[in-house]
Length: 281
Image (tube, rainbow, N blue to C red; front, side, top):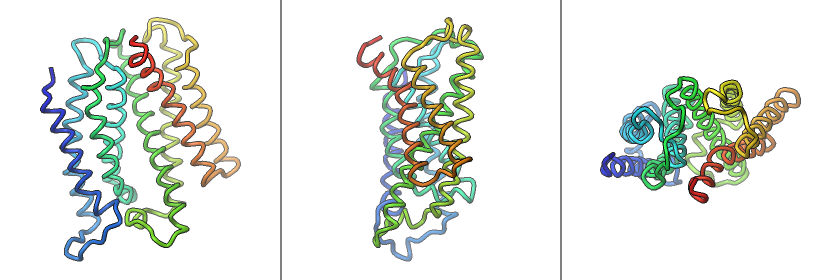
């Protein structure tokens, strides 16, 4: 069994990252000239600091998910995996200069990850999943997790855009908002993320339909998970169509993004939470 010390270490590392960067990168607090560091130096520092909790978090997920020949993937592991992949993708984006401004969100992401890393311990899986040794299942699961992670980043991005748009109309602006790219640039980045997530979500649904008998041991059945997944897909499809043909942007794009993400959460995480936590099935 995974040592409790690994959980505590990962939690503390994430907490320290959030605590370290919160005063200078998020909270509106003056910084002395001697404490000013170049953007490239900060980005490099963040990468080295975040690598420790990300590695420990990945080790925890590997040890708790891969059990013998099967996969243990309950609600705790599912949420923790999505948050870890979100943080990993976000961390990796720091290698690209045009995305480094978004590294200002390192503090809140680290705080969320600190909570998520403990979920496999507090919400253990009830039973291993069936047919997990099949390559089709593993591919389906990986693509689904990547889609969830990208849409999580898109939702965070949309929330940040909402805050930025509100704060632009007020004289006092937080330091983290001052360092962000212009709204139009962030909007383009948002739709690039949504496009990538939409493609992966489409592949997830198609693989679920085509390989349902092989992966899940039964034909496609109508359920809340299936219904909400297709509704979410439809919301994001409508958003991308509206963007292309009608130029949807701003608050309209943000609302559709957050609506699609909420429905997607209900599709998988919501259904697993109800079945495992409430109904104990």
